[in-house]
Length: 212
Length: 212
DNA sequence: TTAGATACATACACGTATGTTTGTAAACAC
DNA sequence: GTGTTTACAAACATACGTGTATGTATCTAA
Image (cartoon, rainbow over all chains, first blue to last red; front, side, top):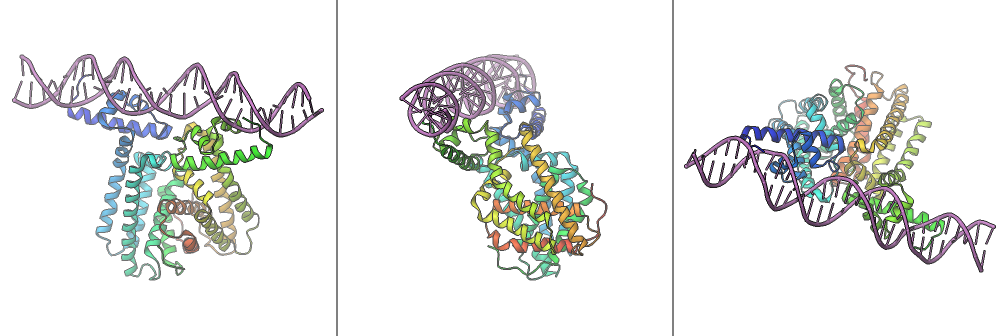
């Protein structure tokens, strides 16, 4: 095959990742063949092995294309909680839900991660990364919730670590169930869904014991 | 191999399902081999193919062992909402969380379903069943929430279909995230988690539009 | 202008999962 | 007690995915 220029090669890489999204989504990650991906991109496995070590490398690269921007968004939120942390969290949560609902790449990759990926010992590195990422996310959420608590937006007796867990669970759960359902416009209801959850935090009963 | 009695054969079947739980959990459903399952049970693939048509049949049988009892529990709740539907829903939700936290078989199978199974066109029958089951669950939750609404436990402006979606999402999300985290005693916090969510429903803002 | 590196395509060797078929010893019907 | 069916084990044929090795045409740098 003819050698392409650097830019053409980079474009080939993107096309392979696009193809991986489609194939992973259609067949599931483990049933997807490197040949499937190559063919979908109009290439051969030679191109795949040139740009990536193996299927796992493709998978992580594909995830990074959507997760890195979202992580940056949360980082900014933590860096400056602002005068209304709870309201800002509401809007950020709603914004994430809207992204899932409206950006097709985000939709597809979330569907792949939530429904078409088997985490097991074989992909231990990926699991460890994911666990670290999730833990960091919870810590950040807890930090923002504590800021809200200091401003009196949340009762003092609320355990912010547990509340962060609940918030994170709620968001993931809403994304997961909506992706499975698709019967209403998530973007329209995103604000209400988030506001209802925070109303619960504001009127939460006292905790039975400390978390952890 | 020697022929076994009917009871012995039924026990063999159970052992195969136990083995399937372990192997699916360890390797993921699609990476799990029928030979893996047979060996784990101390048998051969001959036994597997005698009791089940293929891997999909084993998977559904394994799921049924835990999902059927839980579905029966929800059915009973719908048949008689009682004088305090919201309180009863709180206790039922907490009970499910406790089951996930304390019953090892429930824990394992939920982990398999949530983290170690790839839903795709290849297993379309399983997906269709699951979608129907989930839809039925949401309808039942909505029914109970409407009963609570008639009793004044939830504001009249709340869309019960959307609230059922939120509740279901919250439960699944909590189960999923706790299974991934495992850093606190879920059974201890189950009541607080559910009560906090229902506090949100009771203080929910008016909806922006109709769901669906 | 040419030597080497690049960006793939093609071909091969290997392991391995699957479905099926055949074998077989014990249980059960009679 | 004999024949048949049951509940598996063992062996076989087939297919398929992976990794790697090799081929090659083009780009690029000197």
